[in-house]
Length: 146
Image: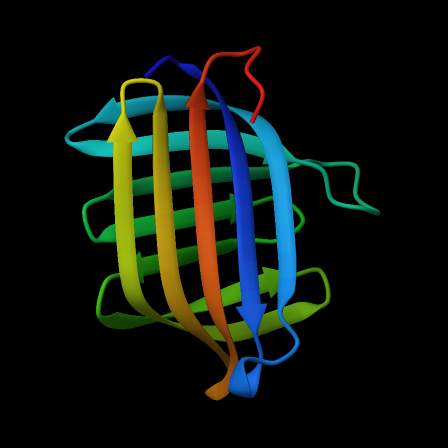
């Protein structure tokens, strides 16, 4: 995998009973490297209403993924297969306590592409929020189409 990559991050959030699926998708350039058997992807994104970009780092390996965001919002989200983790999501409007109950993490790796699929349940302040599916498609090259 090359250092320069494109990421396609897509996710679905389902409310109780599988209703009202909300889809999000973002395509961004990033930087990839591997260290100590773990994969890292760094990328920046703009947030509406803020001048400073949001800096993101994704770290993953078999059965584990971590997403760190810093800037207008700050959070360290840990996804560990068959484990529930808690995190404080710090926003300009206050802090939210999130629970992440990870059911599955599946990583597919080819020479020029990696897919990370995560299935988890999200709760806020101990109350069910959504069933979530997150897919991160990482492709080599600075001029590729995702």
